[in-house]
Length: 368
Ligand SMILES: *Cc1c(COP(=O)(O)O)cnc(C)c1O
Image (tube, rainbow, N blue to C red; front, top):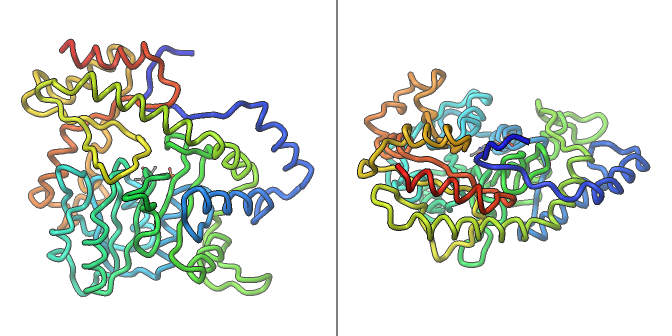
């Protein structure tokens, strides 16, 4: 084991509890295509998350790509430049044009007050991200969508188990997408899901993730192969037993950071929303101009101690070569996103972080 402290480390349940599940997969000889573990995991997730319809996927990116297909989105899609690249890549994979709208400084999320100005006669959808699991202003987004007849897709890759006023945020919009990638709060090694607002939509999504097959001889659309395997589903079922403990542990780590870093001039801590039950998936600090060194210098100071803090999200999606030429990528219109992208640093947060590791992170910030 290296002594490197990563920004995140996957939670793994005890291996001996996974072996009997693997033996069942071997006995069943049903490896994929909606097998028994797949069905059980879908139901267990519906119960745990408080949602009605879920479709499991091989990963979150294919889920995003499929969600756009399922809703027959065309033309232009309003989205945020402040996210992981997969959000916008899913648009390009569907031959759609991203239209970037700036974010709010306090929530890191798309600013609903700037959406209307970006709507054209080609706009058919809004793809918003609950960044770091902070819920978007969903009522305002839906109000605009309803006026202009737009679909709403939430990239909820960060938002497993998050609720607002005791209601899951995953039932908003037409579809929400989860990622179960190894780096996320809840992982199935690789994996993802779409939460649908209706059974009809779930059905279409289930066809689309299986090449478009509706039955043995009927192919309804040029679907993709996005199916989750039985091994990942069995692993997910086991992970569900541990997720509450994992989130509680992350909450403790979050509290330790807040207590230790609260009074440092130039460091802004991530927002707290009393209405929201978080999953503590990230701990993004802002290194503002009042701090003695820049964000990148602090990042380097961490690297020297073998601590891999991450500049999520830098660079902005709109600054990447395949997006830079778009009119909406003009940085003058994305001032908040640019400001955040130049100053944010995500500190290590994962359930197995040791007291010493976390203290080392705090010491680096305190000692510059
Ligand atoms: C992780 C992530 C994705 C992609 O999910 P994968 O399961 O890795 O394909 C998409 N959007 C956001 C915001 C993410 O953080």
